[in-house]
Amino acid sequence: MTNGQITMPPAVARLQLPALIIGVLGLVVFVLTALIDRAAFFQGYLVAYLFWAGIPLGSLALLMLQHLTGGQWGLVIRRTLEASTRTLPLFVLLFVPIIVGAGYLYPWMNHELMAEKPVLADKARYLNLSFFIVRAAIYFAIWLGAAYLLNSWSLRQDRAADRGSTKKMRMLSGPGLVFFILAVSFAAIDWSMSLRPEWYSTIYGLIYVAAWALSALAFTTLALSQLWKQETLSRVVKASHFHDLGKLLLALVMLWAYFAFSQFLIIWSGNLPEEIHWYLPRVKGAWGAIALVVVIFHFGFPFLLLLTRRVKRDPKILALVASLVLLMRLLDQFWMILPEFDHGHTSLMSVAAAVVAQVGIGGLWLATFLWQLGKRPLLPVNDPQFEALLAQTEVSH
Image 1 (cartoon, rainbow, N blue to C red):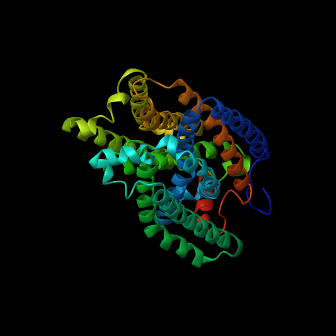
Image 2 (cartoon, rainbow, N blue to C red):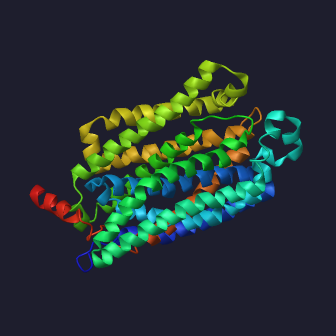
Image 3 (cartoon, helix red, strand yellow):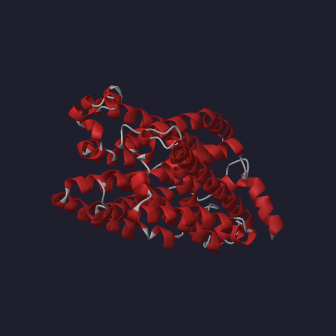
């Protein structure tokens, strides 16, 4: 605790260097896979990118939601969310390999294939590399702009107790959430759904909105449970705050399951060849087994656990549930992407490349996140709601 402000525990800060080393080593090993199988290299990279980018992007959504709704649940995790959003510039740089490897990822890069099928020829004006890059630039501009303003106003609030900054953050968050959802939906279509350009789903983008918000909340809950071990923070953050996070985690688990099952039910019941072929490789063999694991441990098990009050109020148990959700989010990302490249069999090289890429990008991102988290106090002491947070703490004592 410095100058009355709670700072990041030294034990957590010391994780930054090991995370960076692991990330660099992982990326070095991953780059070597390009010498063996260049297609598997880019396929694995896409899986890792979409998983890790989901945490800062989902954090941006949760940050705007907190500014809109208020509540102490968001006050205790705001610094974690803000630090996560400040890692977004890293993903602008990490997007470059996706552009470079677009020819190995997206069938619409094959102009002859696009011209052969009328349904694809009509999409060529949208699905082309130049427009793909322009759209990505627009998405990042929306996300980076919102993150920059929210972080700048929050810092101004910290330094000068500026109530005007509080109002600005709330005013931005309403339209910001709308633009965020639109940008994520179109990004999901561009970066993931267009792996099979002849297929489409109107719910696909919303699945990513819910999934990335869920990834962010699971990671943030896990991070808070570790930071909570610091004595000064544990005096402020109480079981009631973890209870609120547990309820929100339950809501997002249900929302993700609703969108994912709705897409499956509508397509499967329609039984149209042009729609159902997306699911066929994902419900057979190893991918079918993974789908069953995701259903049970991404929805069923967390749903039952989070219905229990004791689980939501216990930081240690809630951290285990959050870890399980985060692991299932990773497994689901494998299931969403890699079957597109199987062509009837599971590509072990693509799976291995994706695993190594997860370690590399994940270590690099975690080191960046911890660096950003250490730049500011762990609680926004000049927020108008902070006095109420302290009052509740005194009452609980």
